[in-house]
Image 1 (tube, rainbow, N blue to C red):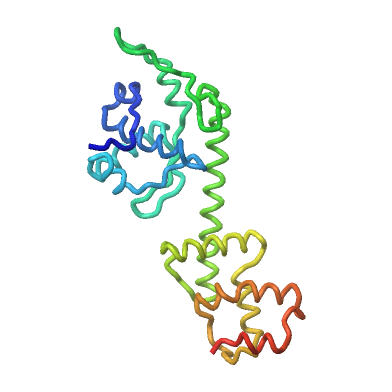
Image 2: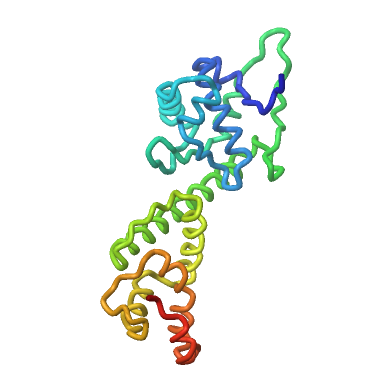
Amino acid sequence: MKIKGFTPIFDSLAKKYDPYTALVYGKIWRICDWSELGVCTMSNEKIAEQLGLSEKTIRRKKETLAEDGLIRVVGSTGSTDTVTTCHDVVMRMELDYTPDSGDESVDFQSRTPDGESYKDSNKIEDKILRNVIAIEEGQKLSSAIQDDFRKWLGLTPNWDTKTNQANYQFFRERYQAGETAQQFKEWWVAEDWRGVEGQMPSFNNVREMWGQAFLEKKNPLAMSAIERGANKVY
């Protein structure tokens, strides 16, 4: 039998709540600990499956942890929450915990991946805050892209597919560079040479011709008449 992976359980949480609450926190904590942004985006169903608990139990335990400030939910889509943990709160609880006779002492000098001590609560809280801000800004940009595609291009693609996740990253980078769906539409409408006057672009049209549109907006002479003809969409 292969034993793969582990989920830590903090004694202080098991003592204050119950082993299941501590188990759910441990799962979220471990994912956050390895995440580049310090967050957990695993769905409730997946957490329940891996821990052998019901999805209802996962939701209830997460609500308890959030109410007590042990985790912070910074976004939610369906049954998937974007969660970050508050390390300093747990560590203060651990410091208040007195091991029973025979228990091994807890190593309070454990480190984050960045080498920071969990006891340095100010640094940890600042890091969590930066991550939360980055996530919130990313969510706002995602909403802006989806709203713009619907408003200006009449497109509502499924962004959750593997291919469109890669496309989203492309559009995200282009939006951060100041390019928008509104500007693309202005270019599309102005380019009568395509022979599709009045026709809205497909999602593939937008993805394939986005770079061309903004190259021409920056340098109208960038493409010759021959190149224009060779790139018609029929």
